Length: 265
Image (cartoon, rainbow, N blue to C red; front, side):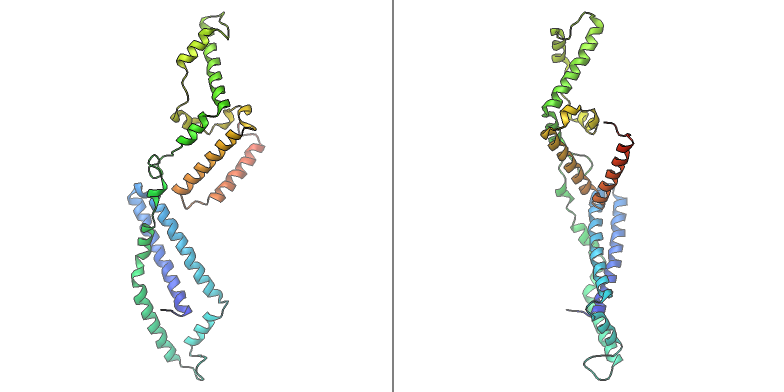
């Protein structure tokens, strides 16, 4: 059934009000159950987008570019193009009937937006088991990539060897850097970086020597992977955040801090 432009406008306003109520219900759900926080964020995102669509519909009608809203208003005043004399009462009862028909059609919409928002929840497919619905990150693949960066791996082992030599030399003054005892101790004590240790330090880029980073394609690809994952994780866990705006703020802050040399590296 098609309704007049004014009825469409009234319906849009009603939908916006019902969506606001649905948002309140979702926020109450989020407050009651912290475990469902991410699901509620996605439900709110769905409702925000639905509100934007309804607002656009209302704005288009108010702008009245096609003149249909004006025609409907004139019809309400009895100024019909199909009649010489206006009939206010006929127009009035026609509109009353239209509103009643429309009300019967949309009476169930009061909670429908809330139900739609919940049904639209796809968080179960957005996260891996390790991520546990956004509570933790799953960066094992990036960790393996980091371990396979040969220059960095070699540097890490060399640094450990240098520290080992310095420690042993305190006990044996005449110990030489190439003494087999140093290598023997390194083989015994050295262990590769583990996942937890990497998670604690992966953002300390300034501690990686320049020759391990600049002009290294593998390192650039590793960084791109980090950015892609962290950006995607943020979008999945906090879908309402304007990531593009956030990135602009970070870029501005970085330029300012880089300019006054308050960033290490």
